[in-house]
Image 1 (tube, rainbow, N blue to C red):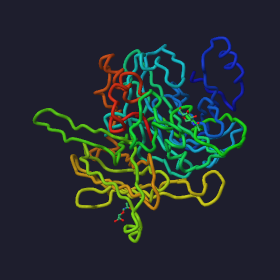
Image 2 (tube, helix red, strand yellow):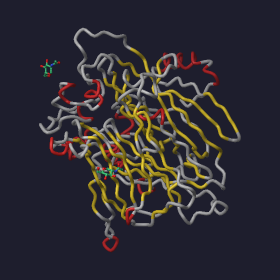
Image 3 (cartoon, protein in one colour):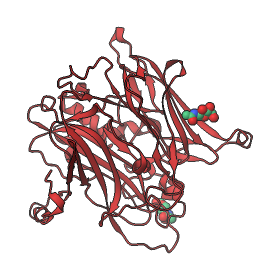
Length: 469
Ligand SMILES: *[C@@H]1O[C@H](CO)[C@@H](O)[C@H](O)[C@H]1NC(C)=O
Ligand SMILES: *[C@@H]1O[C@H](CO)[C@@H](O)[C@H](O)[C@H]1NC(C)=O
């Protein structure tokens, strides 16, 4: 694992290793380039095989990733076939991909297969982003259909610090998990319906874990789990194909002049309770991740049929915003994060494609606009009340949509000359806690296995899949 090969030569010996060890080892080709200290590495996920209608929602542990004490300057990915050719969204819809950082006991190798309990049972510590959801949305990186045309550069002098040996507990090493959720919609009767995971199209009334879905649950991730099938036109045939997520990491070697950023993700469905410092109670954030948009009534149609979902939330710490981007699904018409008093922190609007080629697929969100405030111009104070607005067109009904907002912030008091090994906020609270607690965390945050199922009796309000873009 973690073997990088220049220009893909010598993959044969990994295949040999697979045969010998019966281990699942991704044969990833890392092409490294360097310009002015900025290094670029390109990796590939293990392959997933799709055929018309089929869903793949897999978790890959210990994926190839850039190593060392570095500052990530950009991370993005896209779906390609065996020949490295980009696959358009109208053939394979990329519902989401998510990259999670964790520390694992050295020497522990677990097979990177979906639903594997080896990871849950193994000694590991998830390094969550800085907030704010309690379970799920803990990722460092993650996007969906918009991946090809969304800017993900972290501007100078900032970077996402990883691999700092001082942060990694003794006996552990830093690793990365990738979750890719893709839907083959070739020949689908209703492509949009398949991408919105409409339960009727998947003929699903019971979820992946055997729980009967509430009647009111019309669509969402519980209906498009791994190996679920969306309805295709009768008689439609197309070949199976092997796909991968090809992902690119750009980074520079760590340097004390780099200002480390914190990663925050807000979810417009967040059901939260305030912290109460006097009683030592911290804020709770129950993020549902998905929601539905009902179609507008005739009366509303005159007003353009906009569905607005609004969240007001307290920002836990303070900071300066250096980057912002929203995440919406098809039907989305824009999302804005406001500060107290209504000032705009960042507005992010979707770009819809108008062609057929990858990156410009008609009817799909192929990019989200981003914000790069000039340094120091957008500050959020500690505890400030933020308002997140996610607008969708309600001229038709949508299921399983999202309204997320990512921001990167830097501690306002940080000074580029004074920062020496300032660690990224890794939520140390999660570190080296009890083994049983780690299992619970993962049950919630990862593959939603046994422990978590117990809490999910009464439908989606109880949450389910956790790590989503
Ligand atoms: C839908 O699911 C039901 C129950 O599992 C099954 O009997 C039926 O044949 C399925 N229909 C289709 C079209 O696959
Ligand atoms: C959302 O929609 C409301 C109502 O149409 C509008 O006033 C507001 O400006 C919109 N906001 C965004 C972020 O698009």
